[in-house]
Image (tube, rainbow, N blue to C red; front, top):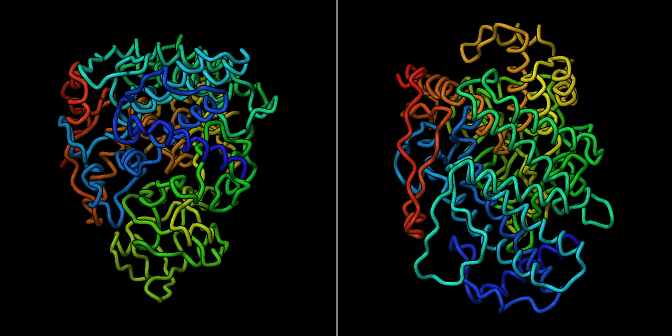
Length: 569
C-alpha cells in the first residue's frame, strides 16, 4: 500500500499543477516556476508527478503495440485494423506525418515529461534543503528526462534540447539539435543520475524508485546502440570505442550485485506470481501501476488472448492449468506475438509460460474452451477449436485478479528494463570485441534460465546457418545470431526487439520475410509489405507536433533497403 500512496501523491501533485495546464494533453508546460512548491512535502509530491509523466509515455497502447507490430515478433491480431496495426505491420505509413500510423505519443508525452522534469529540477535547485536529498531528487528527474529523450532519439533522431521551463504559450521556438548533441545531453543527465542516486534498495531508498543501476544500465544500452548505429551494417561494423564504454557500464551493473535473474521465468510476471513479481530482483526500471482509478496499466487492453473482451476462467501455462478464480480485466486484441516467433520456441523453453495457446473463457454467459491451432485456422476468428484471435496470448502485462475484474482496470507493473537485458547486452559487446567465450557465458545465463541446454557456436551454426534471414560463416557470426535470437524469445511483447533489429541491420529482411510469408499463406490481417525499412530509418514527426513548435524541421524521406525489395512481391 505504501507504494500506491506514493504514486497517488504524484497524482495529487499533478492535480496541483493542472490549474495551469493539462500535462497529458500538451507537449509543453506553461507555468511560472516561482508559483509552486513552498515546502519539502510539495517538492517531493512534484517529483512523483515526473514519475507519473514518465509512466504515461509507455502507458499508451500505441507505443508498444506499434513497436512490436513493426517487427516479425508482433502480428496484427483480431482487431488489428482498429489501430492500424495491420497497416503498420505492412510498413504502410512511410514518409508521411500520419498520426494514426506513427509514434505520436512518444514525442508528445515525451516532451511533456521533459518539461515537467525541467520544472521540478528548477524547483529543487532553488530549494533550501539537505544537499544529498536535493541532488537525489534532481537525479531522479534528470534520469526520467534522459529516458524520455532516449526514446525520442531512437524513433525520431535529434530533438529540441530544452533545459528550462516554458512560461508562455506565445512564440514557441525550439530548434532540433543534432543527434550527436541530443545523445550528449542524454549522457550528461544519466551521468548525473549515476553519481547522485543510491544503489537499489540501500540507505532506506525506495526499491521502486530509479537508482544508480538504472542510470548505468541505460548508459550501457545507449553506448551499445550508438556503437551499432555508427556502423553501416552488422556487428563487425560497430564502433569499438563506443563498445568499450558500453562494456564498462554493463560491468558496473553486474559487479554491483544489486540485481540477479529470477530462477523461474514465470516469477517475473504479476499474471503468474501476483504482487511478488513487483520490483523483483531482476527489475532495473519498472513502471508502477495499480487498479486504482488513474493508476491503471492501459497496455494490456491492446494485447489479450482468446477473443475480444473476454474474461479468462482458466488458461494453460506450460502444461499447467491455472484458474483466475473469476478475475481478470477486459481486453481487446490489436496485436499479439507472431505465429512465426511462437513456433520458434523449443518445446522445453520455460518462456512459453507466458505465451498462452489454450484455456477457457466466459462471454455473454457462455463458457468456451479453446485451443490455438494456426496451421488450420490461419488467424480465423472462429477457430475450429474455439480460439477467437489471430495470435497466441502473451500474459506479461495481464492482470487476472478479482480486483481487476471488478474495477475493469489492470494493476500490473511493467518492466522497461531488466537484468536479462544487461546480460545479453554484455554478451553481444564481448562477442563484438572478440571474446566469444565470455559472450557465451553471459548468453547462457539467460538461455539456461529458460531450462535449455547451454548454447555453443556449433549449435548456433547448425540451427541457423541455412536460414535465409541469417548470415553465418564464423563462430563469431554464430554467437552473434544466437544472442539476437535469445533477445527475441526473452523480450517478446516488451517493446525491445524493434530497436535491436534496427540497430543490428536485421529489421528489413526479418519483417519482410515474415510479412511476405504469412500474407502468401492467407493469414488473417497480414497485408502485403509496402515498404522495406533500412537501418537508418527515422519516423516522421506528426503535423500536430510540428505545429506546436515553429522551429521543428521534419525528417527527410526514408529510403527503402534495396537488398530486400524481393519481400514486397
